[in-house]
Image (cartoon, rainbow over all chains, first blue to last red; front, top):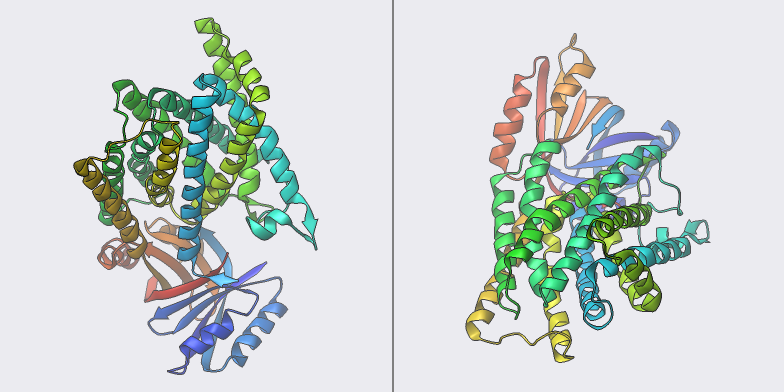
Length: 79
Length: 413
């Protein structure tokens, strides 16, 4: 299992629609709308790196997405 | 489907308390009409309960199109009934012990106090115990807002209980504080630990937890009552076994409904802290009122007072409970912090330092623009600065950090 964070910047005025589209994408485990340098942080859970590419592709297809940065998780501690 | 985690949490906890209030109603009927001996009732509950829970769990394990019924409608993590794992054993022992003490305490209370709506509110004081325990074990010191809301809910619960009929006896209070509440604390803390365990790298499911909890609690209850019988020279065990056969359908009804109340409760525990789950669940005080009215009008319990002063106190209690729950719900602040470190600092060590900061509930070492992404949960932004930012700044080797407040969140649960 590979988990990654994808940090997304969107073009102003598109957030509601973009989130709606992204909620339909299957491998996305969490969508957080944030205030700061980015607009949306998405957590993705996939079986392989190839599938990660597919998910990033799908996110790129969503209307209003300006830029994405993928951060693959190497190690994690969580409650 | 991705929904907001908050909604799911409150839906689960509230459903659990609605179902639980039904259970209390049925229990009262059984106790008044059929099984007067509280120990016998406790034994019957667990004997019949083990059997009924097994049947329900087996039914929920039936696969339909590759996914079990239970996985579809009750808990997505559920696949099928399985044996408990070695790593679960320790927690099950505690949770089962807690449950069996709790149940005995509960039936003792029911036998002392006629009216169920008097028993429940006092048991809500458990929230304060939970806050205290959590601050020790979960590196999760409660914030002033949490303490405040918990106190509001607890006092609301006590006020809400004052009026209806029955009086409070010292014995009952002693049972509540020394037996019922500590038992419930153990029970919920360990059930939460079980829910947070990963089984085969997947989240643990509430249905298996509930089933094994009943099994363990059954064993503990039998042992404790046997010892009790031996000391006091009574034969509650026999009475319990007889009661399980004589009133099988009533007891199985209450245990079947209890099953669902707890499955939802355990799922909620997997999402929120035990104290907060408990606080939401104390809404049972409100849901129990119609049940009490029905029971009283059927003549099963004495009719309660309609003195306006009592009613006023009760309404104030209910308002306090609702306010407390809402303030829990509205005061959670979440954020991501993206961190870059200077070269030459060991990743593992920095990771551990970050993890030790209270309020950090996830640390991920990532490959990409940043070195770490951490997830923060705190009750206030001030605390976010004082307890988190200052600590991060004090960690050697951190070059840059970016705080990103979460405004809204959806999650696949």
